[in-house]
Image (cartoon, rainbow, N blue to C red):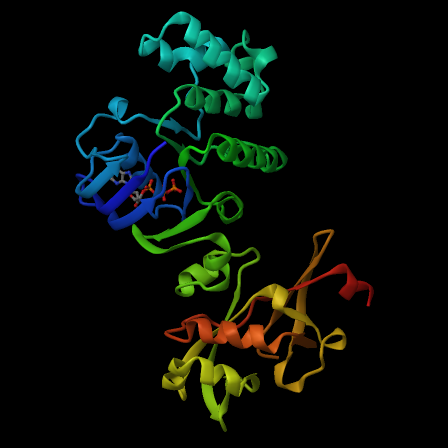
Length: 369
Ligand code: ATP
């Protein structure tokens, strides 16, 4: 395994499309880094540049202690797992897994041993003599993983490897990839547009937007301290509610005015975040996670944190209810003033989010109450 270091990496396609700009990422030995972002944000392009499948337009790419900008893919000692699995239909599972090793002309006995070890790890032993078309989607995905594992590469590069699987299998394979990577401890760069995958798999998650890195941090830090509104809105499902309001002074405390309603920002928070004062009298974005809201009748009853609205839609997910409502306008309270105010302070600025479509999450306890 090796450190993978991207320094100022950029990609401009021949037609002038700038897909990635000035990307800096330092991926430690054995780290699982997830690249996440909406469709077209440049994550596949970034991964393909690391793999050597796409030419790098600018910057420096180092794998281990070698600069590999001009090194052909086959000499980079990285293994790529594709969304489409890219298996050879006419070859057995055994030969699919062995293919890369045969190309490298490893001794037959070693190839056999490595293939059988990988098959054992991946639960493929009884399928080794079958053809890919006779396997389920999940089994094919495991074969693709097997092909990467047997090469014992410096790094795994995975491009949306779970996106062709149904929802249940995806959850199962996600856990398998996580265990496998932990056991093998191989540096991994994993591309996905699914933020649940990003949050559950990554030691760190890098969020891209339009080819530009927005933030790279451990999942919980990304969730608790998003660097900007884009990250705040992208990470979390259902997404953070972003409301547009005006921050007004209220003695040493403040309030966020939201079209006839207002929420308190406590004095302690104003003191802790001196920068918030700069935004007094100005439009701000107020971010509230759905799980930080609760039914007024079950909450603390604190008038300072009461928002009144009309329930628009209720979605029952089993373990919880998602309640959609419009703001401004039946009682919904945010229980934890501190959390709320923290979110208010997290971004403060340049908000363009309209009101409405606010989502709150209620646990069964709230429901029975
Ligand atoms: P998705 O999740 O939809 O796969 P992505 O984040 O992986 O998207 P890329 O496939 O890297 O995004 O594409 C980034 C940008 O580069 C997009 O605007 C895309 O249209 C453009 N692009 C990709 N490949 C080429 C190409 N060969 N020539 C020109 N532009 C391209």
